[in-house]
Length: 443
Image (cartoon, rainbow, N blue to C red):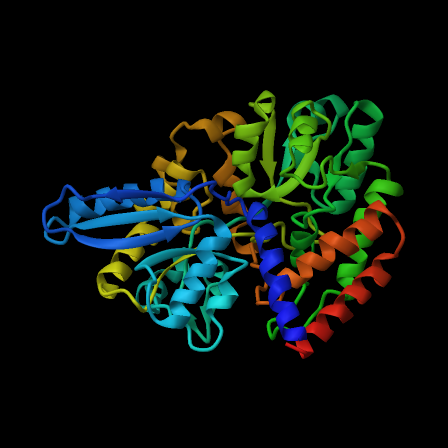
């Protein structure tokens, strides 16, 4: 009975993860055929849950057909709602029929496709020769036993977004904020000299809490899948977030509960907070929903916890794979590598989608410096910042039980500790960790 309960909980909670990773759910199915004008083109079927990703693959198909006129590809790209796509893909792979050639799999769902013998094509022959030119940790989350199955869509480097106008009014130089202690002191200046708070703390999501743990080498699980949610580092970090609100009084609970809420967008657009910590993919939220901040926001590394400590962590993502049901697996793998491992492909991840490409050696390419809406909004030093901290972007541990952690954090822990203040960080995290351990043992 408990096994069925766990499966149901995982399905329910996974729907929440989508909005956290910068990948919006589509309202209706759609289909696009790209490259059909080429005579004799091999048709490949591609599934995704984010229609915007098709724009990137369209640019890749155009380049492929120009460079390989003797092997043209017509890509049939189908977009489905997030849950429908992942659930149908799992059923197709389990039944041995009906799967596409290529498919996007969101990070939170990826562990489901690595259980047992993965029904996905290995990509090692393409990944390994280029691994030192990438933020390699972004491949690890799509791998099993040394075999790389998914190719990443972005780094998802977590950064601090500062409102330069508020910080200037407060008399704070953002480039002098090196540590979290510096950040607290800067926040006190913001509160004393402006009408804003320093930051907001989410209770319906965990994109502030999780990267702060990873900065310190902690996580929700260790590399072997053992629960570490109640580790002392995690307890101390949650206490730090509580202290930002109630002791230092420089932060407030996020309007709407999380940084994807309409209430938050309006609050931030009205310059209610001087900063927010989110991954690089959150840039699009600013440009789409907080237009009045155009030209005011600056991107900087996260403060360190200690001297020499990491100033970022990788968060969120989508891995594109080739399924073992593809009748053109070799061609599909070669095309996928062409699209997501090549220099131009990584430049297009930025140019077309506004994502921080996982191939770091293109970050200072002239094409990456061409004017676009993100440079206009945030200044043109975005990739200077990324290059500065590229060796400090460790990825979080992902397994099939991560959705249970998210449920515990967003329903119980963060609300009880930060909003209701009915439990201490230690009490709440230990209770949640024990619950997850119990569920693991009975799965």
